[in-house]
Image 1 (cartoon, rainbow, N blue to C red):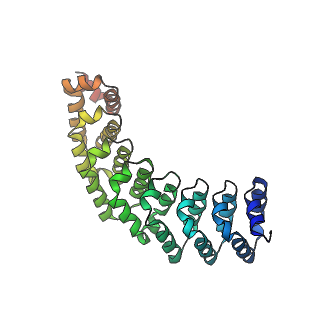
Image 2: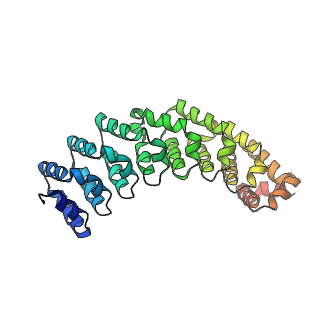
Length: 298
């Protein structure tokens, strides 16, 4: 290992040098990692944000002890936001999140992100760090993150990267109280969400994960404007999702939906003249049994 900071950083940030040193990682001792960290102290951000160097750092992180990870974290604390938003640097921080397993590391991450959570959540590279932090077995220790998602639920849901975080949260929830809280927010804001290119997927995810019984009120609210939502690009997808859910769980409500959208002539004419309406009609017909199709045709 070069005993010079700049020499080591320049080698790591070189394609051939990075590959060579990555192969050597398997053989390094704990004392070697201490030396590497000390040599890179002034250049850690530069190496993490390098297209070759970040791979080497990820290998080092995987070999670090808890104490060594804490030393590394201290080196990057002031540069955390910049590293998180870098296309290469974000992978190093994701690696830390994947591996960390102590209260001290949790506190470090919390202190680094809590003042910039919204920016980090919706930014293209840093969003993946926040998504990795939302895992079921660790949410108990990350109430600050859950509170952030609940407080900013609608704003996040209407954003490409933010909606990915909300969908991840919905998938990972194990608390009935939090599920009810999320459903309450969706029910209040369903018009805004259902018509949005990202928000509509949040509603669909909630229906998938929370199930028919928990989402019944939400679906009924949406279906009060079934024709209107069927005519729009994004909300028509939600109508399709609801139709599938009703067909599987409540045949009576499904038949009412058929009556409104297909058997009501005026609504059928409106839908059939719109490309999204035709899409909804076509998918509804696919859900019908042969006998149901015969009944409608008569």
